Image (cartoon, rainbow, N blue to C red; front, side, top):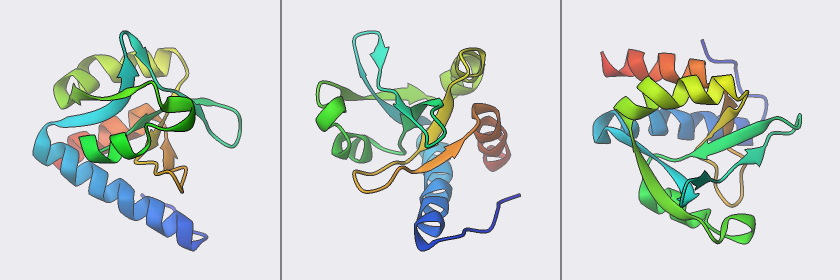
Length: 123
């Protein structure tokens, strides 16, 4: 169940979240920013570590600037995300930031919630 947005930015983040879910299901992959074996991380307003993810290469590339300028857009197959990444992200206590932009943090979610909603969208 979605929490009603409090601000216009919250509404935009929620809209991008749903776009993300549909695009990832259709493409069978999501995108992060990485270099070698390192993935870009950020923090949420509460100081938790979070990994940003995007629905497509272009959206990820738009955010490869400032602290992330050395990173390149890299795909992650949806099956790999659900089978491996979710477990590792949860184990490392890392949250997921869905579809951030240079202007917006994006929607911060627990990896387990994201996995449940991706699974539900697949059926």
